[in-house]
Amino acid sequence: MSTHRPLRRSRNDRWLAGVIGGLAEHFGLSANALRLIYVIVSIASAAFPGILIYLVLWLVIPMEEA
Image (cartoon, rainbow, N blue to C red; front, side, top):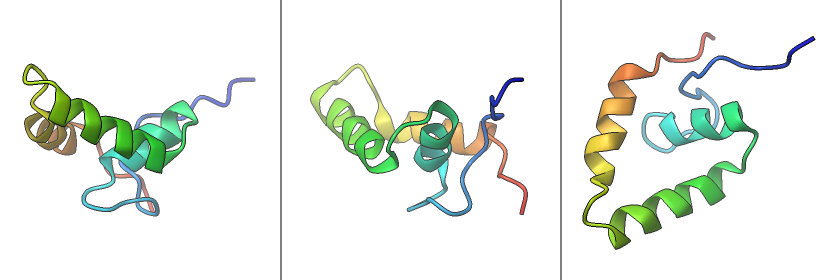
C-alpha cells in the first residue's frame, strides 16, 4: 500500500500561497528548512529566479481540498 500524496498547496502550513508547505508535505520534509533552502538558493544564484518559479508553482499546483 502506497502512502504517496498528490502534490497540493498546503492550507495549514503556509506563509504566502502554501507552495513550499505543500512541497514539504509531499516530500516529507520540514517546511521551514525547505523555505530557508529556497531563499538561500534564490539569493545566491542568478540563474534561479526564485520569485518567478514560486509564482509559476502557485498557478500550477492546485490547492489542497478542505
